Image (cartoon, rainbow over all chains, first blue to last red; front, side):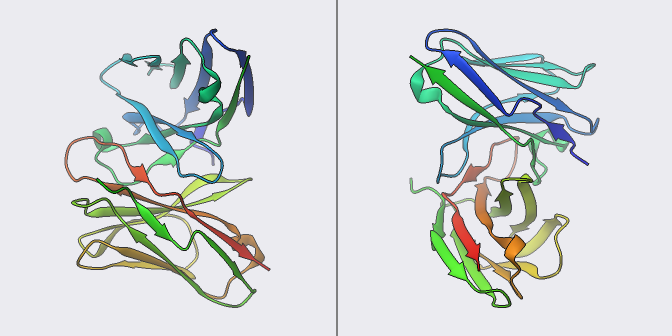
Length: 114
Length: 113
């Protein structure tokens, strides 16, 4: 049972444009969400997170939006750069982020083209 | 500040053997979690250790076990290896307390032949 879903396995975006990565979840106990970026042969790197008490969190070029009623979150990258090309994982946890277990989606491979 | 260190980076083992992977967390972090990444299943939680105690466990068979030492370093052991155990094994460390992200190591690539 996949509790966190990333339905788009891949996404291609032109440099300078907006990249939008989507994530859906089914477990209503999740109340803290994170995005990780992963390059081949490396561990995931934390990007940005959001608590369920917010609907938006912004950090530089990265913004995460949370729609609790739809159980949906998205990561916006503006403007997209070639170095953003990587696999992006959405993750969720409970207890406002203090729970130890992260449940990951299967990832979306982003390719930013010149 | 040094990051999470996992050793070895690569490992090849034969079916039926056992393997031990090591993880040194970020200094001061007492929580260490282990994840398995496979192409079909994505990143799946194995278990978490905090202050030498297993605090949470994922849905993996008993062949997968771990432990944590007093210096917070952790080891993961897989016995009676199967071909399906071939994966990237990732370790993550977290600071205790308020919401915080997990910091991952580079992983150990295990290949079972």
